[in-house]
Length: 278
Image (cartoon, rainbow, N blue to C red; front, side, top):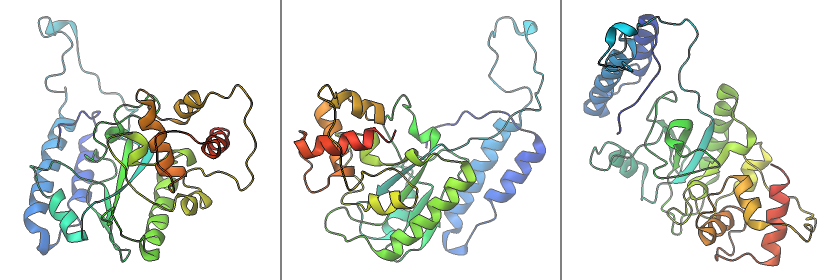
């Protein structure tokens, strides 16, 4: 996991945060919980250091600057939720992967096929789930989002009702807690066109009906003759540097039955309808 750059907090807050982060231990995962707690303590030292260590703007003229701690600050506020499928065969396998320092990946939550929700990284911390990605002007989704992994191999697994129901409950909690905009519930494929295709064949409409992301209407209006599909994709948030990949990512999310890299007349109708919701 990469190093973090956090704002500075009071020692009281740091102690409280450490206690909270350390409160969920279990004997089954004692070894990894110990590592989690130690990393939390290490970060707390960075956060509580006053003045901040190694953050002089001019190391050659240290007398020309000082530290005066403001009382107006906060912690990371997630603004997006990115949904993934694990591309693995079980919850246990994914948890094991997220314990691997070699793999270097993680997510805030993992939801099993039977609906069990496993919280693995505190929402206020940065998990390594998005990788190289972009949505709109945001090029560091790891820092601005909550990552949710759904236990699904991405090949032939059918999405289970128990899993989706647990996801919807979790999304409702996150949306309320962090005031996440409806438009900001997206998939891994959306933010990494051409590199990722998850979650595949996902019931996005069911989520949109509950207020998590947008979906197109049953009756689609024709776009104007000068409708620019590339600009529409970009306006929604897609990185169009590789336009065919952006089209594919859009179709993974909204079309699903056809994920070729060209827009059909029907695809354009859907794109225009979705675009008009942003």
